[in-house]
Length: 442
Image (cartoon, rainbow, N blue to C red):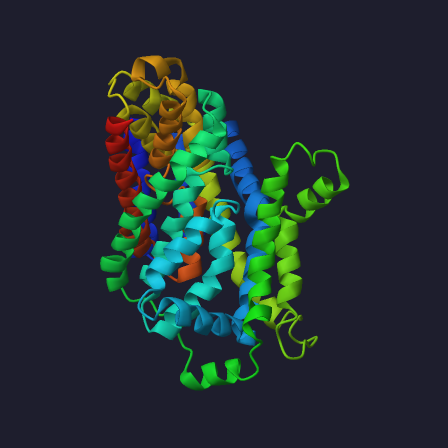
């Protein structure tokens, strides 16, 4: 019954938002409460889940969303995004924007959370797509899949790190296996974005005319200066990850400083200050409630509400016990290397968080590692990557990243299901195929 309730809940969200045009925030909130009631959750648990789900989700990425949108607004309005677009298009060619976005997302998500990465690169993605004259749909899906690939399969992101710890896998081996496997799977994701998603047209910057573009880019900064608000935060977060694993630096002032500067909120705050240096002349009007910053706040408000409501839906599902129900049911199937994938995919689909899916599924299969054939260090690493592949399948209404993609691209819910959700299924399935072939060789 919990699974049936879940299916009904997802269908209801899609109907309310796509057919009846109800705001996604209201749809998610109402359906979350209804699901909790029919699933037999106590009223206290439902209220607690609502508060925890909204608070924990917006607490983790709320400020990141706001700062990311401020950076994006200054990149766009100063013409810096178009400067970067010209340079990158000159390097990759006008017809290679989609694979470029997949590759950029792939590398950025290793040190940076997928949500942060999408917000950082989204303005650049829009500019590249506009310059190339292509639909935003293909490049945005490729970017989302590139971010998802390494977020779920390559340390030091939390899911793979936690799963490796639970299963006793060597973190270095997980990285060595995860990088090539996820890269091969991303090829399938980029092909999906290029061949299928790109056929749906979404205007990268709707309403903008050639005159608007000319006025915006007249005093655009040079490429190096334009890149700083994006590159500097990414480097700071990378440096934090590197120093975190360096025993030589532990307890030093350098370690403390880089740990502080590398926190995503601080790194993006620095990026926001750098973004304010992009206009030829920074005026108080740009920083006012009616200026660029004010517009950023208005854009962020809707995204924050919807992302927080997605967190509510995920927390309700998590506290309803559906993950445990699915895990216990699937364990009895005993299907070798496919089992970790199926369990993680079922839990991810049920409650939304890839990290929770990996941790829960790892805890379920940990006692069965020998029986499933995961004995050597390489085999244990394969098990972790298999969990990661499953935790990518599928991203939908209970996943906060789904709503980030939806809101930042202007897709409606129905389109996002058809493009990005289906893309995560392609990515995860392709990874599983690569893992099955790898297991035969190893």
